[in-house]
Length: 460
Ligand code: ADP
Image (cartoon, rainbow, N blue to C red; front, side, top):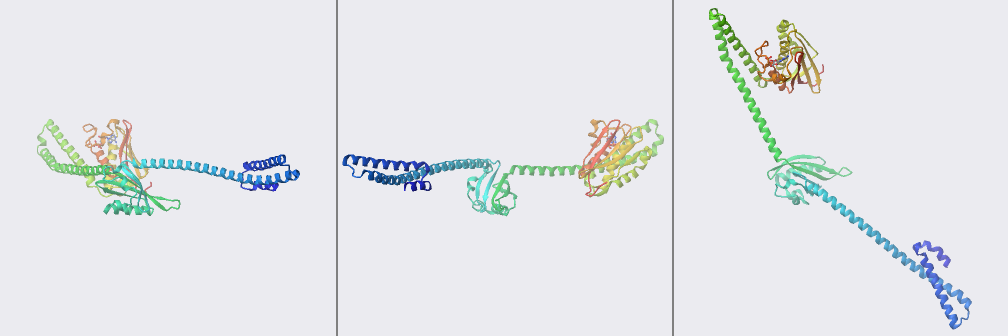
């Protein structure tokens, strides 16, 4: 039996470290039984010692093993219990740590939300209930983030505000981000919403952000007002320049025609000095006429311009060359051009632009016969057209000023001019949304370049 139990022991639920408990109980029982038998043998004289010493210790061994198994099982149970307890404690410690971490992370997110500057940030569930909300944009309002926390939007807003918020939030729940503006208690807020989706792509929450844009709005309104005022004042100035130059034409015409009358009637009677003085007066009247013409032209660019259409710069160039034929022949100018593109613009004004630049290039050519070349280069959505000459060039410090009205550099020298041609060019280019500039080396020549919007399919 002992052998059988010994063989079965590993298959029981007793842990191996408690196997010796079973053996100890077995040996103890045998020892006690042998002790009792020795005692009986000494005191009461055993009648069959051989049988007794064989059978009773054997029985005691079986009984001891039984008790030992019981004890070992009890110890195993205690051991298992202790171990479970320890595991439980460890699990509890882990749980506590996780809770701490969660609280910390929740605190961090809360801090993030609460410190959201000049606005608010919120998460809403699919029943449009605020699950988290915070931000400093509540300061000017009479309710705060804590009044929204846990509430559905219907519980906190009403009327138009609710309508606006609800329709946009519902759209977000359907998967569409939205943005809208809303005035709440006199403050203008810009709302932006974003749907939050799970792994299956279903929207489970809304991320909503708002920014207080009251000051920005006021600033924008002021700016718009300022632009409107400026446009108005610009228009008035243009009208003024137009009216003034227009009205000046009449008295000037009078001066010119009376001067001509005087010349016709009394020209013979004037001596040399008188004739010279008279010439000055005629010259002055003539200069004034061209200045007034220039001013009129300048002030009409915005108001009298026609609609933009595709314009073939090649034919504009040919027309201008034809108009300037006399000047070209007289000066012996050689004027060449690359193939020029089609651009979008006001044909008359573009002709004026090319004419002013070409006649300047001829006029400021210096001693040599003028050599002028017109080229064009595509730059993204626009064309850069350049008029290059080999003339007298322009001092770097004068290069800005030549585009101003009446800022001719040689008004009373060998090159007579009103100083308005390039100002007209700049105005025309600006009206077409472009830029004009000059690159020049005194004595070497000048290249005037301007940009014009390209026609969608234009290639050279
Ligand atoms: P104007 O020719 O009537 O004086 P513009 O406005 O056309 O007036 O030109 C302003 C000034 O720019 C001119 O006086 C001249 O000094 C200078 N300028 C213009 N075009 C050229 C050029 N191609 N080469 C050298 N100087 C030029």
